[in-house]
Length: 244
Image (cartoon, rainbow, N blue to C red; front, top):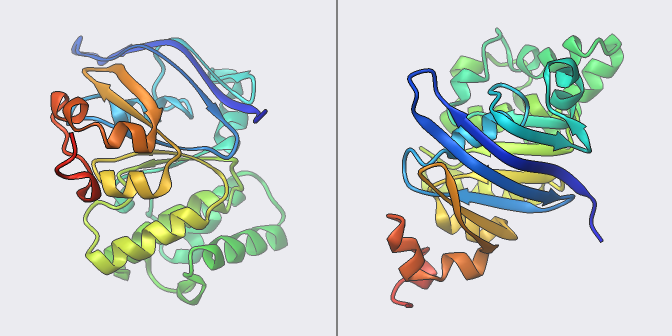
């Protein structure tokens, strides 16, 4: 049986203005899985991802590899869970691609030679090694997305949490990016409106609506259920259009 890598129990979270973003979320994630989190705007998808490495802290609890997510364990948790933001400009802030990808390993206090190896390995994995010396802000949007993933991979996490990874990509860049995500072996939690991508990559899918898990099952089972999707303001992937 696969090892449980994330355990979420009775998680609820309200924003400072009192808006409840998550309500009583309970979920187990297993090693090597790819899970898609789908739902309408404002459903709580991004909020849930931000709890996985302690950026947000709600009621209930989360365990990563059986270690509770809390202030004293954040260094360990963030070494295990790499979060990739929807907008790569929120992730890239250093002068060059090398500096951006090296930022994490340097802060992990790795020796200089190990930092270099980690950076080169991560950039090679996302096919961006040739851009190692470029200024990050001169990259195309798709290239920035790839380097954003490299900034996380350089720290060798065992779980990737990705927020809208294919948003704002042209068709060719989107296709290439999906192939990249499929090639990454780590456990993946993907929040997205791109249901065709979720179907292509994910083993399981979760529908979040108004901060609550309303359905969970195989990606194919959830995404082929047109009436269920429409009930939550979603449309099925193109290959399932016309099915009931």
